[in-house]
Amino acid sequence: MTVDYIETTREPSTTKKALLVGISYTDGTQVDGYVLDPIPTSTQNVEMFKNFIQERWGYTDITVMTDEAEVEERLRPTKANLERELKALRRGVNTGDRRVFYYAGHSDQLPCQTGSEEDDLDETLISVDGFKIRDNMLHNILVKNLPIGSTLTAIVDSCHSGTMLDLGHYRCNSVYYPWVNKGKRNSKSRCNTVVRRDGMVTRPKALDQPRSRMGSGEGDLPSPSIFGFMHSEIPLSDGDLNTYTEQRCMSPERQFCDGWCRDRKQRKESQHAEVISISSSNDHQISWDVTRNGDVVSMTSSLIEILNGSVSPPWIDIPVERTSSEQRPQITYAQLMTRLNHKVHSYTMDMHRYYREKRRVHRAEGTKPEDEYEMDNFQDLQLGSLSPLDMGRIFEL
Image 1: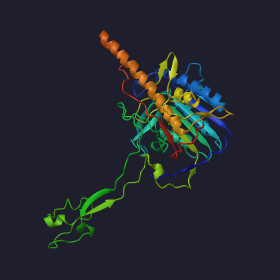
Image 2: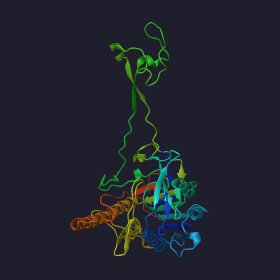
Image 3: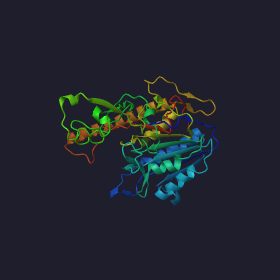
Image 4: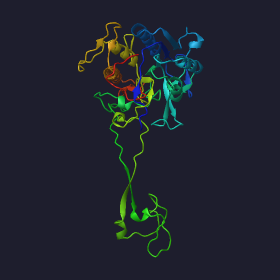
């Protein structure tokens, strides 16, 4: 994989604009013949995030789209309305402008037709009217041709959201956390141990000469190819085995981020807008929210707590500094993702303990639960970007 982007240019902010989308699907949205489960916490997450960016980051131009009953029709998150507002968020962006896109709701995957996905699956958002909006469209609308010096931050709190914006780098932005391969969704701490080796084939030296003749001269050898000699009808003798030579082919160019992007030669002449995405799961995982005493505990609430400076695990002895003027925490990308992963892992463990207790009660009573319990799944949060991020850089919205 060739890294096309290395430098980003962040200019002083001139305008800030945000689009926040939360879909609860309480009206029985159907997709592929199935009624989607309602997500009542989606609208609560949106409200929390709206208040946060208003109070802490000074955003005033905020468009909120939900499927609550009192919302006017033009702001219901239908496919047509979503596409219109996504384009409105992107329209008129200049150097120094900052944009935020937030989504909480259902998502899915569809077969990729372009070869642009490592797993051959496109990620999609699901609108309230049951349409799937592919990540290709999100990238084309929000990311493509953003001016240098502008900034786009996407927060996607949904399933299958790891590469929702089709950003080229994510494994190289990973941070360490101690759980590895937990649960059937196979969460991983780092996926950067892929080693490509030269492909090796074996062929006889005789095949190095095109259409050469052997023995009595009757008949030509097949044209040189990897399998030509082995499938020819010419008998092999013991002496022929000594004529083999190793032929190496070049390893294929890396098409996807494998975690080693910073270690390879990079082209420094390319510049681009600064685009990042924080996703609550990787492309094959499911995201969960938990309700405690009426309060939502989610990736969104955890992100807000951390950026407010109220979450610092005792085993991470890194103080969170605040600027004197804006009272915003000075936290690096590495600190943010480390604490966020620990926070989400913590409430997921609480959920597992809760379900284990319910299962124990059902067994004691000899009854069966109405639904299967979520007992062994975890979320592997991802930080995506157009270029490998400086993980020691201060996070900004």
